[in-house]
Each structure stands twice: as C-alpha cells, then as structure tokens.
Image (cartoon, rainbow, N blue to C red):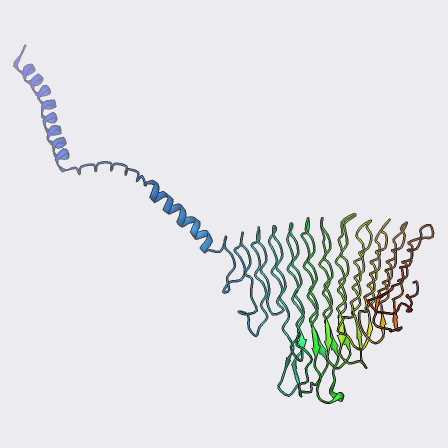
Amino acid sequence: MSDDTTHARRTYRGAPLGMSSMAVVAVSALLVTAPATPPTPAAPKPVVQSPAVQMTASSDWIGGLFANGLFRDGTVEHPDAGLISGNGYSHTAEKCLNSVCNGGRGGRLSGNGGDGANGGTGGAAGLFGNGGNGGKGAPAIYAPNGTKVQDAKPGGAGGTAGLFGNGGDGGAGGDDCQVACEAPLDQGPVSYSSDAVGGAGGEGGYGGVLMGNGGTGGTGGKARTGKPSKPSDYKDAIGGAGGIGGHATGLGIGGLGGNGGAAISDAGNATGGIGGQGGYSLVITQVQGGGGTGGEAFTRNEQKTATGGAGGPGATGGIFSQGGIGGPGGDVRDANVGVGVGGAGGPGGNGRAFGGRGGTGGKGGTAKAGIYRLGGRGGTGGAGALLAVGGPGGDGGDALAAGQSETAQGGAGGDGGPAGDTLSKAGHPGKPGQVKASAGAATSTRAGNRG
C-alpha cells in the first residue's frame, strides 16, 4: 500500500475525531452555563384541628345564622322574628306609651306572632304558629274642665295564622270612664262635655288556611259616668261593641264574637254594648262561631233606664252546616234603681248551601233590678238553607221580682227562622221568660208572650 493511500485514510479518520472533541467541549459549555431546573415544591401538610377547635368553628357558623336574622325571636328594636323561625315580639302597654304598637311577625316557616299594645294588631304567624293577640285600645282622655280630648280607641285585630295554627284574639276596646270605672257613687262637681262611649273590641284573627280556629273577638270597652251637681249635666253611658270573631278557612271552628262592654251611670241612662258576630267556618259540617254576649248595664237614677246590650248574631253556616247560635242579651245588674230592660238575644246565623239548618236565636237578658223590670226578647232563629229547617227562636229573658212589685215581666220568646223551601219546616218559637220571685216577693206578675 502506498503512502498516499495511507495518508488519505489517516486524514479521513482524523476528521471525525476532531469534530467529536469540539462537540464534547460545546456540550460541556452548555452544561456549565444552562440554568438549573428548580425543584418541585412539596405539597403542604393538612392542618388537623382538635375537636375543641372544630366545635368552636361550628358554633361560630350557627351563631352567624342567628346573628344574621335567620333564627331568632323579635326584640323591641326589631319586633319581627328571624326569616326562617322565631316568635314575634310582644309589646306591653307600660313600654308602649303614646303610640300604637303592632306585634312582631313570626318566622316565615315557624313561629308565633307577637301581641300588640295600645290598639296595635297582633303579629301574623309563620306557616306553623298562632297569630298574636291584638292590644287593648287606649282610654278616653278628658281635660280638667270635663272636655273630652280623645275618644276611647278600638282594640287591635288579632293576628292571622299561616297554614296550621289559631288566629289571635282581638284586643279589648278602650274604656271611657269619667270617674273611675269601679268607683262608688260620685258627687264630683265636674260637668262633662259628652256621653261616655266605650271603644269597640278588635276582630279575631283568621285561623290557618289548612287547619286552625278563628280568634275570639275583643270585648267592648266599659263606659262610666258620674253625678255632677246639676241634673242638666247628667250624661249617659254606652258600652263598646264586641269585636267580630275570626274566621276559620280550613279545618277549624269560627271564633266567638266578643262580649259587649258594660255601661254604668250614676245619674244618666246606661246601655250595654252590642255583642260581636261569630266567625264562620268554610269547611263542611264545622261548628260556626256564636255571637258575643251583650254588655250589662245599670243606672243609679230611678228616673233613667238601664238596657242590657243586644247579643251578637251567630255566624252564617259553612258548606252544608248550620248557622251559629245568637249571643245572649246583656243583663241589668242588681245595683240598678231605674227602669231595667234586659238585652235582646242575638239572631241565629243562616244556614248555607244544601241542608244547612238555621242557627238558634240567643236568650234574652235578665232584668235583675229596677222599679220596672222587663226581660229581654229572645233572638230570632236563622233561616234554613235549601232542604233545611229554620233555626229555633231564643227564649225570652227572665225578670226578678222584688218586694211587692207587680211591674216585672219576662221577655217574649224569639220567632223561629224560616225554612229553606216548602218541604221543610220553620223553626219553632222560643219560650217566654219567667218572673222569678225572690224571698218576700209577690208572685202576681206575669210571664212574657210567646214569640
């Protein structure tokens, strides 16, 4: 082999060796100058709280719900309860001065409504709960010279229930007492500008839409007049009317009508307040609310008349059910020395739809005292619905005889209600009232006429 060939081979082989050396140097330079890759950070270790810390966090969360108004009772600053649950705030007359305060609303899901004050309405209940009671109305106010500055105010309406619950009771009417309501005979020199008239009772609240009773109507306010020095200044006393009973729109009973307010006069006439009408129930065969009792009355002037308040009407019957019973008439109290006439019984409620019988009329009030005494007339029976009889008339009120008096007479019985059709019967009339002789009394007085 020649030298040229050998040289060529050496040259060929040497070239790759030179390039390899340069590549090694370049790679080494890259390894030296290239930035290092940062290490992957380790995952943080979970923090494990102790049971005490976990309970504290849970309590803070629940407390936040209460603080944010979801679950809490109403307060004087925020009368309405929490959004979900809680009872509404109930006001008191002592803390609610010179204003009308409505009871707080119950929670939207569950909770009772709060009570009102000074004629304020009762708060509405949640879906589950009872309505709050209405507040008693504010009394009449007189100036020192006897001028009436403010009339007696009506009582507040009872709060309504939601789906399940009873309606709240209506508040009593405000009193109008020119002297203390229960004071003895007054000979005060002040002459008053007007008669005393008690405030009306508030309406009872509605029962729950699905189940619950209506609230009772509020009692009418009392009325009381004194005896000024001049007969020309004698004023009359008229009791406030009772409130209407609350209605039951679901399974339940309509509320009773409120009783009429008492009337007491030292020198003028006295007339008891009218009883409120009973609340109805819409559901089949449910009991209807009866009318309220008329207010009692008496006067201490033998030349004046005391008349008991008329009883309230019974509620109209529900679907296929009879009407409510009329309320009894108000009595004339023992202390009466003038003419005494018992209040008339309230009319029975009419039947509704098919087969609803008329309600029974209320009994007349009793005349317990007076120079002439007449028992109240019984209430008229309610009309029957189609294919139903009329309601019976109420019995007349009794009269109590005293000494040898022959001026006592029982009240007439009420007329029976008409039938709903020609195939049914009218209600029978009520019985006349009796004269009931007390010890040493004459028995020659007569009973009242039959209705």
